[in-house]
Image 1 (cartoon, rainbow, N blue to C red):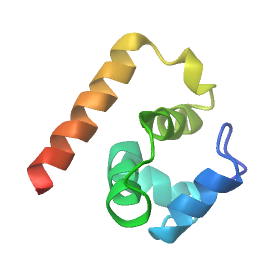
Image 2 (image 1 turned 60 degrees about the vertical axis):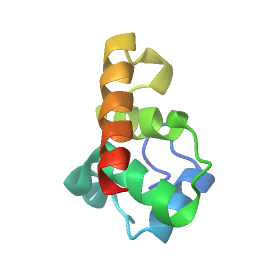
Image 3 (image 1 turned 180 degrees about the vertical axis):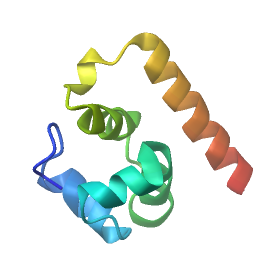
Length: 86
């Protein structure tokens, strides 16, 4: 996973801990679900920056280039998904 732009060893380790080992795994589950899995199973303190980094990695850009609208939509989806599971 660390071959994807913006995902280093820590992010890769967190993803691997929830069964996401390859880019195809991440594409299959999507960044919001991957983020939710990490927060639930691996580290509930992980910040939204991981979510943004996952989306940006799939787009091949730096996470800071994501527009505020995209960040807001990702955040709203992730937090809404988390509320739906409790």
